[in-house]
Image 1 (spheres, rainbow, N blue to C red):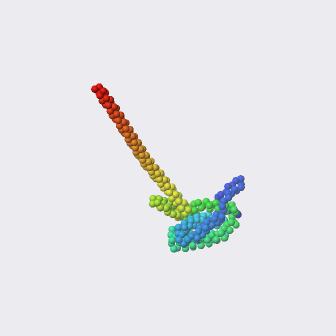
Image 2 (tube, helix red, strand yellow; image 1 turned 180 degrees about the horizontal axis):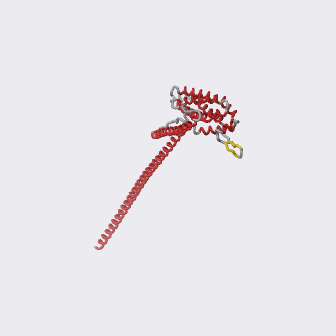
Image 3 (cartoon, helix red, strand yellow; image 1 turned 120 degrees about the vertical axis):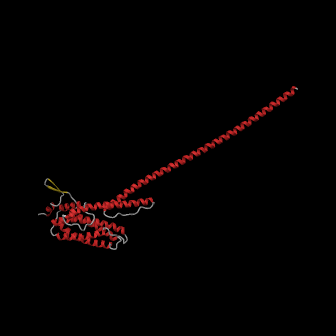
Length: 332
């Protein structure tokens, strides 16, 4: 009996059309796991290159390692190991050893979750973790994966890869070393733990984002630079924290912009009022000056006219008196 036939009873993902099996191409199971191994190894190398006092960077890297390895281990335990143990000969012992190696790794991960990166044993624990994981990866890729690839068809591996990709969506993002690691217990507990982890990640992200948003607001009020804070925890937690911080920042920016607009409007109004008052005062001053000048000119003109009229009247009277005196003299 073909091994992929027994796999058909475990996985779903095919469409029957006119008697022919149509298979949608997906990343196969082994490629998916190898990609996970590469991602974790890149994180290991980043940690090894981080400086002795790069505490924030080390914390961020270890949080990523915890998430990646927790999801990876859960998917292998819930899907890959059970399927391969049932369908691929001579993998029983390798799968059981892998489960024990997972168990050790998960305990180390659980101890690193809340350990301060400044703690004297933080780097030591991460180093031991990396050694264990690298040994585990080497055995899987050199011994386990070749047996699986030689036994299962490309279709079966694609179906298995799709099932594992689906399992990743709800896999726990934190280590649970006390939980069952074999079916059926691990499937049930893993699903519940995955939901709890993701809810916890969202709450953690909201809390971190809220704290950072308050710090940002204080920085704005005191005219200081925003604090450079890197969220910790899983990808979900960090993403949620950034969303909360950005939303709060956008709201604060809106309020600040409104305040600026109001202040700017008030300033413009005050300037306009001052400018208007000044213009009115200037106009009044100019009008007063004009009126004064006009009055002065009018007074000067009137004075001149009156003086001229008086002079003409005196001259006329003088001439009349002179004529009257001449007439009286002739009459005598």
